Length: 567
Image (cartoon, rainbow, N blue to C red; front, side, top):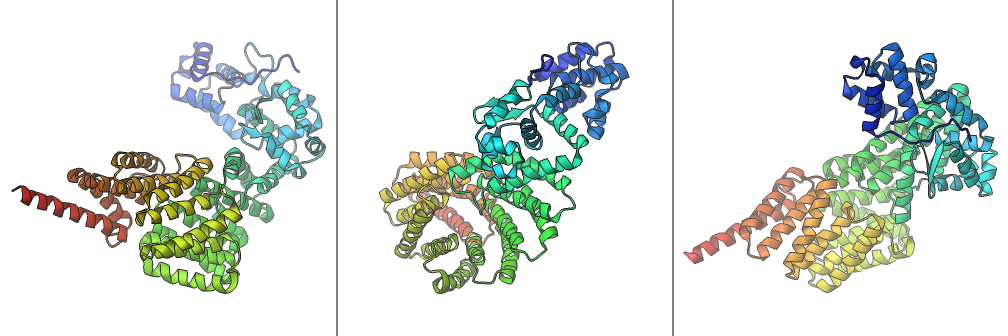
């Protein structure tokens, strides 16, 4: 290990500011703009040697922090490796000089591992990523990974103060990472492209596929990998501009990032990555490709999650038009999209259209896929149950919900998000039937699964909060019912916003609880909150809006009746 290499510790912001003020106190005009200094310190990621080098450059040139930032952003740190940037005290060498001394001492396999990491997020790089995708990496690194000796390489990087390790993860200081990536690209542009290509292909191979990530394991892996996949995707978009093959792979990563972020209720971020996937796929694959339809479908689902049902419908119709043209009307992916149209139309309150689409789906499933265990078939059965519930056919609804639950458990396991959805649906129907104890038991199963898979503060988990509230309200456990509503409301406001239809649902339930307790004034306040949202988001003629308006009318009538009796 080099004695004059610096450990990858960082200044606090106050320490960095104090350091620069002390060094540059002879030239007050260089330190008078604190926001400018903070921007420079953040750009240098509070790395002591980098701040020492910047301060030395500013002292010698009498240039301010803004000018130094512009030089870095334009030409990289190598542009500043001259006598003007030589440290004034403490360190004998510049950043690049020290980095190159360490880098030159690494064995080839360790150098390959470090190079790969320069194109990832610097923080919390999972060692498992390299273990899973051994075949995507070059020799001799591949040999070490195959034999399970990657810890030896990480230990060497630690010895040279290039990384730090924490359990099954290791991290680079982002400044060291940037210098390393810059050095690699200047030294060998083709080599840099090969390194980034290895990262891209490994990410494509390791990120789960599908419309959503339904298990804890899938979501946990996504949480670990998504910061790295994002950086690799963005850098690949710039590196492989002229390669249709690489752009197609980048489109896959962008789409899967959208899947994961949507599953974690990060709706804004999901749409950001799905729109990137959309642009790439339109350009590379054309307007009529099934993969483009898959991205349109996922954009629809994200808008649906946000309560934007009319916008969602536009995207789903675009998806189904592509699928009917390229896959045919009886393809399982097309059927799944038909089912999604049913779901959107139900949320829009257009039950006639939902029923028409469902009849179309059922006819195909009965003729072609009746015995197949596939998510398109599961969703068909679930939608049949929901339509029966809307029509008041509760016995039939339960029959179909239990059938859906059975095949989902068999195909997906008992700890899957879709299984929880079935338990929750069953609970709601049982509650309507007055079977409150059974309803509580079913909803508890849904709650337990969703907490394990998604956590307590996820909008899908919170749907069980509203169900608990309704059941306890019907059991006259008003305090407990209201408590579940308050928990639900806190999460809705955080993830969905004040004006989301699900927020309105919670307000409506709170109004019903207050009404049942005889507190009509407070009940009216909550119902009016629900009505405002439902009118704005769903329309005046939506069944949910009419439901709330009817409650308000009933409360007013009850209040007037009570007043007359008093008089």
